[in-house]
Length: 265
Image (cartoon, rainbow, N blue to C red; front, top):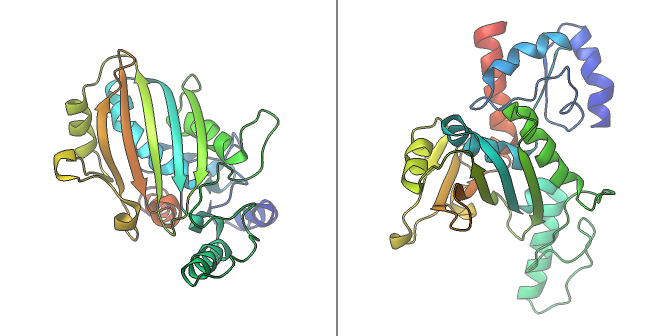
């Protein structure tokens, strides 16, 4: 992010349009934060600073799933718990999981963690990025703040718990939403299946639902386990899975660039 803060304005001053994958510019009010399936019109605001921000990986996949439901009935509140792959922490994190797993399989003492604060192999860590004064992690607050900006609704209540899991690629999210008007599970499946960039895999009788191991390398957002929340009148539960390196980063950035090229450059 520090590199982006230093160099992005220089590139923009020379006439380039910067599509930035870091967190540096996401909450800048003069920089659009774009998920093409959700707010493609926001790309036009690149003219203010010459920079477009790519959102956090976990935010991107969630808002793609939220958008068709929000357009049918405004979403009042979102409660999300994530199950995020180690690749979100970089190549060294992938290596750390691999080495710990190999050591366990050989019956050896696991190497001390260097990337993560604790052993990641065969473990789940409710700790992504640094802890803040409010008790949330920075990753969790990214999801809160970015969702409101992308959805263009500061009144949405969003609360998040982000967890690192021993998976190499693909983030999964358990998402609970409360809407102003009731959306049945059947209607939610219909809305999601018709939405660009979403693939619905939801057949519990056949044990079919999105799996991280199966969506790795794919560009879409996959949604399953669609069911009504029986604890409130207008609630839904979703299981949302996407490749964090593709739709969560590179694919989304390319889609932004395509909109730029087609409409604004």
